[in-house]
Amino acid sequence: MRNHRYLMLFLLFFPAFLFAQHKGTRVDKKDLPNVILIFMDDMGYGDLGVTGALDYQTPILDQMANHGIRFTNFLVPQAVCSASRAALLTGNYPNRMGVHGAYMPNAKAGLKSSEITIAEMLKSKGYHTYMVGKWHLGNEPEFLPTKQGFDGYVGLPYSNDMWPVEFDGSPAKKGGRVAHYPKLPLLQSKVGQEIPDTIGIIKDLKDQATLTQRYTKEAVDYIKKHKKDRFFLYLAHNMTHAPIATSEKFIGKTKQGLYGDVMAEIDWSMGTILQALKDAKIEDNTIVIFTSDNGPWLNFGNQNGSSGGFREGKGTSWEGGQRVPCIIQWPKIIKQGRIENNLSSSMDIFATLADIVNYQEHPFQIDGLSFLPNLKDAEAKPHRDRMYYYYNKNDLEAVRLENWKLVFPHRYRSYEDILPGNDGNGGKYNSKTVDSLMLFDLRRDPAERYNVIEQHPDVKEKLLQMAEEARADLGDNLTNRKGANRRD
Image (cartoon, rainbow, N blue to C red; front, side, top):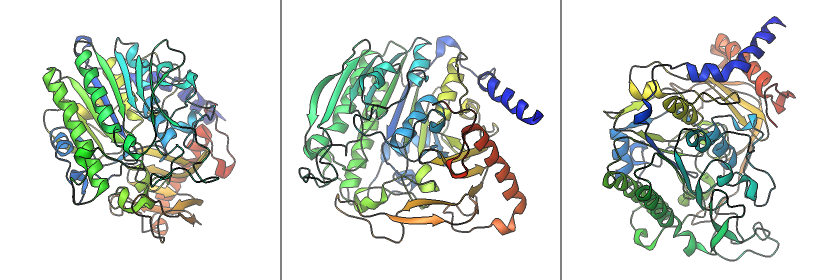
């Protein structure tokens, strides 16, 4: 009982601890940087040149990696659209906030206004804030970006496959999978506007092919307009989520096919945005973060990406689902390109930006940990040593401590032992079960193939205790635990 009271006290005062832990590492107020956060959709770990992409190149992103920091052990807390985006923007495990899975159109659910987003946090420090692209945290007016700290917004409210069109571009089949979806709207709104304007309808794959160009132009125009302001720009591409499409300029650009062409256009987009920063003479003190919401949707075969050799993909708690590429460029602070191999998470972006701007007013516990010292100093100690792998509504499927990962019995959809689809049509899923505890040493077995639980009973016990801490805090449906610190 005494230990339980100490745990509750720690969790109560955890926010203050979080924002005080790196006192002295923050940036002087007059030198606060601009922030550009670029979030891909379903882009896998192996989809960049620097991470092993084949038959196409990403020279701009590779150069960004070579001059900035490339994270090789960067995890999202859930490998699915809405949950991953909620975690990114708030610095929390999504299940702490009651966000799960991917919201359907008109679900009457979304990220609660009581949660604090990066936009709200930076806005409180004098930043202008803007979002371009896929939102997917509730499409009803009360959930849209301009209710979550953004001064303006242009983009799609959810995934680009949530429309009455089949993956091959043909109209929805009567009674079929997508027949019930509404038309896919391109929205625009500004703060104070209750109902967003619909400035276009995405009717077919030709319209989908315009999205990357539209979003890039919107981002560049924003940079030009606000180059004298301190700003936060969040650009969430709809690509590379199926159905994929690219503008005519990039069709046939690569040997790989359409997926490579899409990635070539994304690389072009990145170069165009970086050039806009140079032209505005604000490149030096602008943090640019490039990452993805989860691993690849592997059953789309040649029209989706690569997990880079990690096990499985999107929608699973294996590394291929949750480990994604991440590149950070900040020339004023990161003077030399390097690789960061220590464990990090998309939740840590909120905490790092909070550390930079000295934000200490957060009303809740958050799960992110600042890696600002690691941006400044290659010799800084690792900022994070553990992760919880939750999926579905609140299933604790694995825990990780440093390089050790303990996987619990659970059932999951699988891409293995079944052929993927091709040319825009998704294949079927397999269904598999983990029947007993499995322990993996990710240092020597990143593909999670060799269960070494019998060789390391001490490690197993340590991770089992860690799992109990997770269940006490966040709960676990698999063991019928509710968790003391979940917000409905």
